Length: 206
Image (cartoon, rainbow, N blue to C red):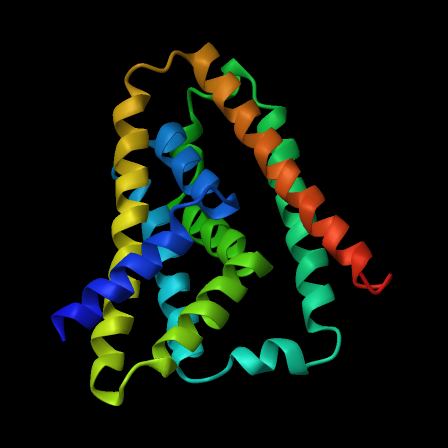
C-alpha cells in the first residue's frame, strides 16, 4: 500500500512538475495576488487534476481518441484561451497593479484556473491518459493508494508553486511585476502557438 502511494506520488510529480500553462498560471496568481487569494488557484488546479485522474482511473481515456473532432476542438479552445491570457498579461501596466488583488474575486481566480486546466489537451492526456492507464495497470488492491499518491502530488505541487510565488512577491516592485507578467504572457503565447500547430497538423496527417 505504502509503495503504491509513493509510486503514484512519483509519477504524478513527474507529469505535473515540468513547466506548462497550468504551472505558469498558478505561479502567476501567487505573484499577482499573494496569499490567501492565490489558494483559490491551487484549489482550481487541484480539483481539476483530481477529477481528471478519477476519470482516467474509471477508464475514460479511450473516449478522448474515439470521439470524432474532440481533440481538434480541445486544441482550438485551448489555443484561443491561452492567447487571450497571454495578450492580457503582455499588456500589463504598473498603474493596473494597485487594485489587482481586489478586482479579482475568488470566483474569477477559480474559474480562470479551471479553464486553463481543462482547456489544455496535454494536461488532460497526461492525467486521464497516462495516469489513468497507470492506475488501471495496478493490482486491484493497490489502485486506490496509487491514485491517492497521484492526487496528493498534484495538490502539493500547486501549493508549493503558490507559496513560492507569494514569497517572491515581497521582492517584486511594480515594474518587476509588470515584466514578470509580460514574460508569463510570452510563455502562455508559446503554448497557444504549440496547440495551434498541433491543430494544423491534425489535418495534414502528420
